[in-house]
Structures are given as structure tokens and as C-alpha cells.
Length: 164
Image 1: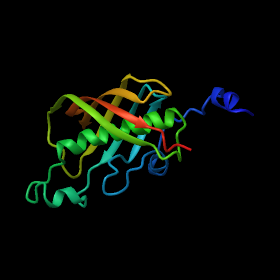
Image 2: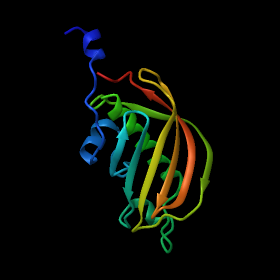
Image 3: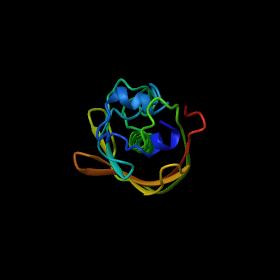
């Protein structure tokens, strides 16, 4: 088959990504891989990420030793990683060495502390972006037990120049 035929073939729908698939899409690794599972993936439109917060994570040694709280910027990063997995899975970009860069974070608000023992659920929706496009915009909401912890809109550039 030629490249045009291969490009036009539909990608098998990936609706869930476990940690092994996440690592095939994202370049992040411990201690900066901040999403454990992505489920309810609807192509590149929306997905839900899961991050189990545990006391043995390195940020809790200094933020704050007597009152461990997940830093807000890490919650936003976890939402962005969820978006990266969604787009990567939706476009069939496994094993392609994608690099994803923040361009903007807007309307960011923190509503609740996130602490060890919590399960952070991140709902991410694409506001702007299309297959082949470099710049994507997302809305994200992170909750714990149904209670809003953080929300933001963010823009990212997906660099596929390394993709093989």
C-alpha cells in the first residue's frame, strides 16, 4: 500500500489507555509521568484521566512535609498529559516519540486541596485542534470524589518532527 492509502485507513478506536500504552504515547517518565490511566477516550474530542495520589511521590518531601498537598501546577500538568494521551491515542501515535509543549494556560482556578489517598479524575475536552495540526487547545476539569479541585484551559503544541 502507498502512504496515501495507509493514511486514509481508519485507526482502530482506542477507548482506554493503561500505563503501558500511556508510556508508548508520552515521553514522560517517573517521577514526572502524572497520569496512571486514561479512559473514555473519544477520538481526539474528550477523555478522562486518572491519577492516584500516593505519599511516596517525591513532591511531598517538600510540598509540604507536615501537610502534603499536590502542587497546583502538577494538577494542570496531569490534565495536559491526559490531553496528550487522548490526542496520541486518537491519532494512532504510539511509539512515535511525540513532544508536547505548553503554549498557554488560561482561566486556571484551584478549588480544593489534593492530598495523598485522593484519586484525581481529569476530564479533558478539545476546544481546537485537528489531525495534522500542531496547535491544540483544551479545557480541563480535575475532581476528587466529584468535588472540583482545579480547572483550566490550556494550549499546547504537538511536535511530530521526531515521529517516525
